[in-house]
Length: 237
Image (cartoon, rainbow, N blue to C red):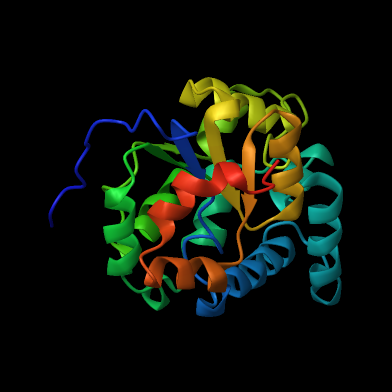
């Protein structure tokens, strides 16, 4: 497979870097990965944590709303959940075969000269598998993921010693900016989640709320590069 080229950065662009969310941003939610992930989380709550099966769905929703994720909520509540075991159970059995290569997106990403970074709450293994399925594994300069945001969890002596850090927390946004070593005012953050976008604006990122169908149409029309060049004229925040 041909590697993505790295031509000189365009000095006329308003951006030096693009931060891309992964799931439901670079591929459609219609492929079923998100729904399968929810089912796996609910099964984890039942089989690994002992919650009643008829309460698993509502508990998953409540944990997400309150803590940002089921894993974060369980650890905050004192459950000694090993993060690798959790991600292996929840992501390890996902139907990745439903994600198909996207050569149009690959070609368009190759025309964008700015640094391109994945910024996801998911673990690195999941991110790599998704990018591999999309055919985009060599189109990004860096992956900022769960392990990046939570380097100290493995050192904790109790579950609530280090709270799980994820988007949309401001701390997660600041960590991403520091790790990527970017100027937020010259960084475009693309995400499908309104809360994540709101947090990005707080830390000074320029933002675009992504609707995959519209994003895909933009890619299909070979318009993404022009969009990136002209987005300074949009009310992106």
